[in-house]
Image 1 (cartoon, rainbow, N blue to C red):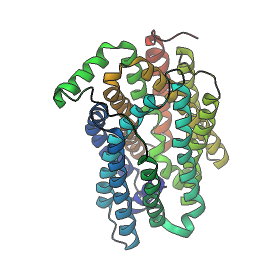
Image 2 (cartoon, rainbow, N blue to C red):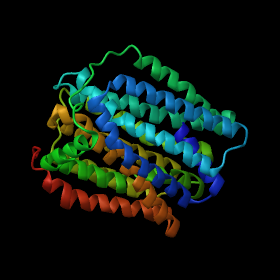
Image 3 (cartoon, rainbow, N blue to C red):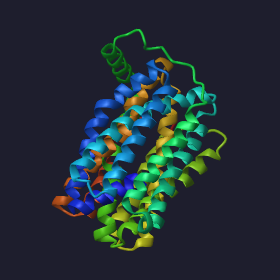
Image 4 (cartoon, helix red, strand yellow):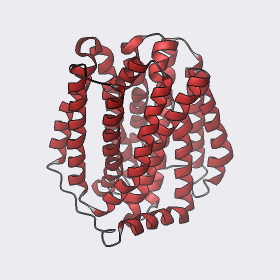
Length: 373
């Protein structure tokens, strides 16, 4: 809810896709700086305690944003500063969260567990924007931020009773040495390196539509804030469908053909979304994009988790988080700039074409460590 309301608020205050892109750039810089440190924390410290403190910081940020909007004290630079704090907290959280999963389930069930985890994670991506669509006219922008702040109490209550063994595998080395060792390990593991590069390119050019949804809602589809809530929820619906389909499988295995086909399918749906002015068609295409994306992410995540050595897991997943989330913000930046200078549909179509070329000529041919079928 906060992400949708924040994007709408920023666009309402500036009426410029450029500022949406600039906001993504600021988030990208912070994610670049802190994702790797978050991965190192996952290898060194008590992951449960780290996650609890991150929730506290995020709660405070959401509450401050809500208060400033309520008293009409919010300014564009406030959105950038508070967004920076939230991004920093999120950068630390993601590798810690991902590193917890192998400690909770067996190796054989890891792929299915990742799919089930995606249902809850992306189910929020469906419910939150949907609530914006239903409740925005009643609670307004500030109400979205207040509800988000309240929700963190439930997250903290879920984390408190958890008991996870402390991982001290990287605790004896200096921070710089540990980071360099993690990067050297990734460089030596060709399969992991290829998966990370492919995910990075896909995040930059195939996920940039998220940043431009406020522009589509207002200028292309002309459906307003409530309509934005619904189309922002469409990828979340797709992720639930895709995750349920994967979780229903007895065992999830990544293979070259599936990964390439998912990239092509996501790109095709994104191109159709960019060319339509019909709300129903746009909604269905975003559902397809969301389903393809989560299936791709789950297969890549499973392949990485099963390939990485435990001692490097947090640092590798920090880089993976940077590739999937941090670089998505970079993609939002480039898409916002391209949309400002050309058109919003063209920015998304160009990105989708880049993903197609990457899948066919780079990603697929280099996945030699995965089965063909």
